[in-house]
Length: 91
Image (cartoon, rainbow, N blue to C red; front, side, top):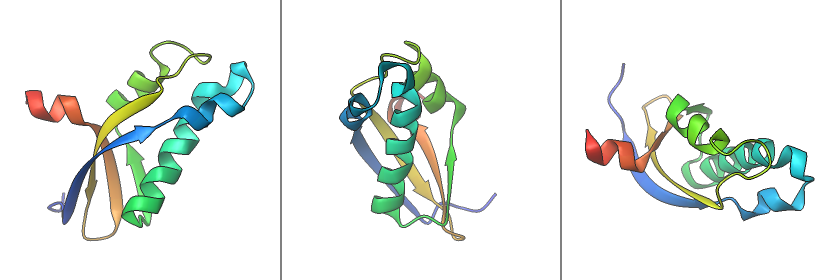
């Protein structure tokens, strides 16, 4: 694996997930997260860590979190890896 060229920590607002029907909110939250990563990191590819996915889906499809704190790592090829910021601090 290549070394991370750029790393940033963001708090991503997921409130736009509430404009879709209740039964699609977490799906929309994932889409909002990917759009945020693309906009802020100019990514060629996005890899979401399973811990981030579990944090989004923890309360089911109807009630995703309003915001999530993530660490974005961009490698030399432009692929961005999305991880939870709190898990990085614990390790």
